[in-house]
Image: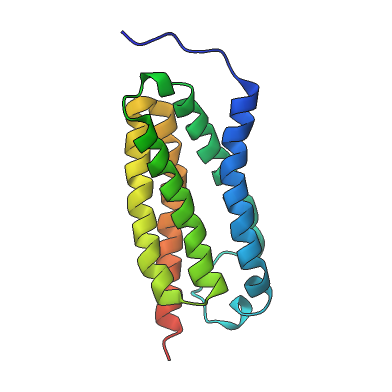
Length: 164
């Protein structure tokens, strides 16, 4: 028998949203210069979304990821291995940030491609772990997985198109 659902907790909810948003902001800081200088000059596939779309999509995804984290956090006392769950969550955020560093800051398109596959794997693991704790939290990782899957295809095509 599971414990009753706790009341909504505003401060932990806001912190849960703020954490991925901070990672996203750091990624944005890493990205901003290259988006104006390097990125416009590289070859991109025809299905590359317009630049203005990335910010709103990522912001929405980071909010969704934060909501998922909150849903798991409020059940943390019921989770035997909560530190492991938290570690998986933070590894996923770190890998997300690392991709921006590899792709946009260092212009290592191939290394970013390899890294994004690791990110995808950890997103799947994170989603499954969250799902076992709270179904909604796990399901909230689906849009994130789908977007990063699309980003992987985009990264691959950019890699192929920019081979010297």
